[in-house]
Image (cartoon, rainbow, N blue to C red; front, side, top):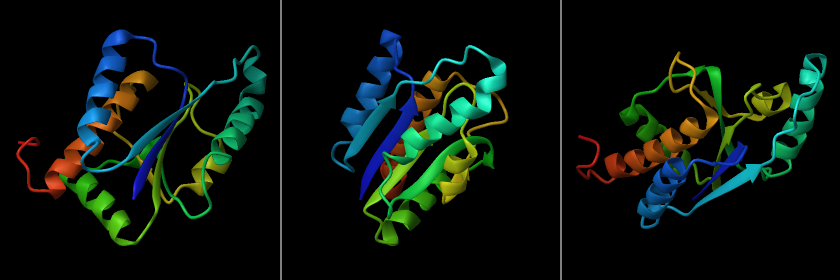
Amino acid sequence: MKIKIIALGKIKEKFLKDGINEFIKRLGPYVPIEVIELIPIEIKDENLTDKVLQEEGERILACIKDGAYVITLEIGGKQLSSEDFSKKINEISNLGMNELVFVIGSSCGLSDIVSQRANFKLSFSKMTFLHQFARLILIEQIYRAYKIMKGETYHK
């Protein structure tokens, strides 16, 4: 199984880039991972937010293959422990899925069309995080999940 992360926005801060790259490198022996960065559309008029989310949603969906299992990061998603997240990834892998796609929306969230495409909606916390931090946390948690699956000691 391959993992793809689709995220709106680029990581600008060096410390975040370094952290993300470190965990991508650590994931190498476990699973191939690809990060697709899409440029968010600037909202100049708050009345156009829904239209912008729709356009971003169409761009996100264009990056997702039909048979992929999609997990969106959403405020209203289900919160999981690291162990349960590991079990979820393992279950998806056991379904014979070729690709697991995680979607991180823009600061305005995700369009309904992307949310409806999700097979599972995940929330890290009731707290709000910067989208750049969410990407680092996600990649670290994917790494942690694989360490848990293999019975290795990182997660303790």
